[in-house]
Amino acid sequence: MTFRHALVVFVAVATVLVATGAHADPPDFDRPGAGFATTVLPVGTVALEQGLPTYERQRDDGYLDRTYTADSLIRVGLGGPVELQVGGSAWNRLEERGQGSRRHAVGHGDSSVGVKWAPGGSGDAGAFSWAALGQVTFANGDSDFGNGARQVSLGATMQWQPDKVIQNTLYANVDRLKGRNTWTLAPTFGRKFGENVVAYVEADAIHDAEDGNELQLGGGMAYTLGDHMQLDAYALHRVGRHGPSVRAGLGLSVFFGNPKN
Image 1 (tube, rainbow, N blue to C red):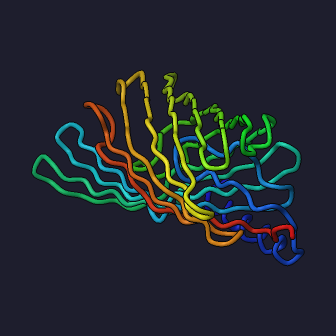
Image 2: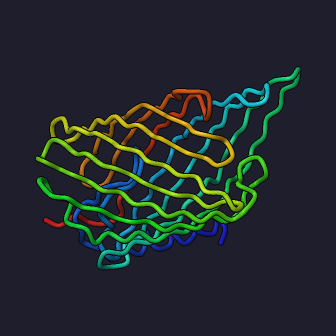
């Protein structure tokens, strides 16, 4: 299944759900920040989380690359502690400059399918909760925007909420690609301001068997609009020699389902 086909399925499912009026509590979105929410969508509901876009800047072998990615994540509640996720990027743009030359490329990225399992607590204030996500990314993207091989990922997010204001998480993940493992460990410290704003800081420690160690520091914020939408913004900056010098993005998340009264 390509990501374009997944989008068609998503639109059809969302239309049916809106028409039938599926009732559910508003969800926790996976955007922004490292990791993902420790809760799943209610059964029969759908969410779309869209980058608007994501920006990455990296210098490598004398070339300066700027990449813009309209990354998308479709989430479907399957019932119980299980959720289906389909991801990809239908549009990407690369601007490359160096060694006396310039070029740009436009295309689509790889597609992924994953299953989230969230049995570990309610995520309410004062509670501990956790969730795991297994994911397969298929090598069906254009050459400038894909991995070139199938990637298998397994991650977990653990969350501590000592009260209704503070939210701390720890995200751990391993990606298996071309016989090599990339490990990520990322603590996040968040705070709620009023009813609609959450801000956070995070540190992403990454070990890549091929590219070396990488450390990214930054943070972001999210603003909820009613029970169905969220706007977000984030930025990360490299500390050290490896990895992208800047990662940043804006995002919009939409929940398709009628909240319970």
